[in-house]
Every structure is written in C-alpha cells, then in structure tokens.
Image 1 (cartoon, helix red, strand yellow):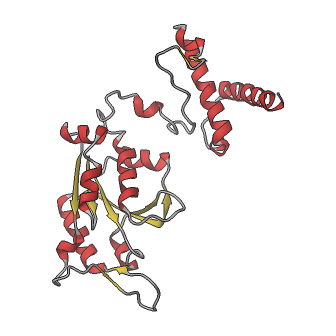
Image 2 (image 1 turned 45 degrees about the horizontal axis):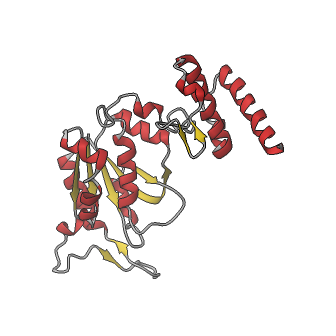
Image 3 (image 1 turned 120 degrees about the vertical axis):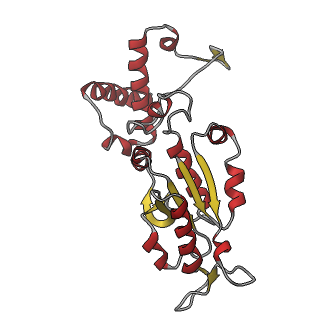
Length: 249
C-alpha cells in the first residue's frame, strides 16, 4: 500500500516514519511513504503558497493553484489513490473508518493544510475529509500520520502476527482487556491467576469480561455501538454489579 503526503514540510513526514513498525514495514516493502511539496509548483521566487483571504480577516489562506497541481501530480503517480484532506470539517476518525480504508486497499494521498486552511475550491479534487478530533493543530501532518499509522496496522505482515490488529482496542467496538507479562508479582501487584492456569476457555472469558469492564468504566458510550451477544450481556451485568459493589464499598 502506498501513502503519499502533499505537505509543505516533507521533512516532518520523513522523520516521523524513520522509526519502529512503520520503518520496518517500509524496509520490507510492505508499504511506501513519499511526499510532494506544493512549493515545487509555484512560479515566483518566494515559492508563495498562501495569500490573504477575500473579505478580510486574520491569517493566510492556502492558494488553490499549487495544491491542485500537486494533487494532479500525486494522482499521476498513484492513479487509483483516494485523496484525503485533513481538516476540522471532516468526518471524525474512528475504527470503522480505519477499517474501511484498509479493506478498500486503495493507496492514500493525504492533503496536509496549514495557516487558516485551504481555499475552498481545492476540495473539488478531494475524495474525503477527515478530522482526528475537536481541537486545533498547527498543521495536517500529524493527523495524516495518525491515519496512516492506524491503516498500516491492517496491512498483512506489518504487525508480524496477523491476529494482532483484530485483537486490539476498538477492533470489536470495545477497549482492550488488561495485559501482563513477567514477573508474576511486582510491588505487591500480582498477575491474575486465571492467566497463569493454562485453561484457554477461562482465559478467553476473563479477557472478554475485562474488555467489557474497561469499556464500561472508561468509555461507556462505546457499548451502545458494540456488537454484543447474549454471553456478553451476562458478563456485562456481572461487571456492573461488581462495579457498584466497589463504589459502595
């Protein structure tokens, strides 16, 4: 899968993808990361990519011409790619969107903004707008990297174990169950006995119950969207009862 960033700061992307899982995936040829700088498509000596807004106001607006040409060049390199603009007015990123990107298998071109945002006409060349939350950042590079990182985890081989992505938080609409490793006891805190007993059926049930517990305590809003079955209902009722007992105690 190919990820191409249209950015005024390609060094930002290059540095951010030189570590850990993404670096290994690139070295193994599982994905590619490249950049196009809109400044390369300007025609003045200052390589100007922004201008004052019509109608007045503070800040500068990114000009349509260099970004439109940059998108055209990106589409020449990746003809079947989806163009994704990172901007506050986009759909809020969630696991469902991540999985849709991954399942579609299309290359992704990220349009990274700065300053007061894009000339509205640039969105004529955009397939989808994405936001990563209701807050303001200095540019679109960090959100684009977040999207790439989330999608890349579903590319076969990137995580090493194929089941890793499907077992993590949000993969089934729930937060992940607690994880433990050696030593068994540290600071008076002990690894739950069920995880050390070797009974895989009990371990599976414990993990599901703890995933429900973590979600109920920290993100109860997710329970309304999660695909729960009858057994989950019983486990959740037990979690609620236990939690109320803890609070009353």
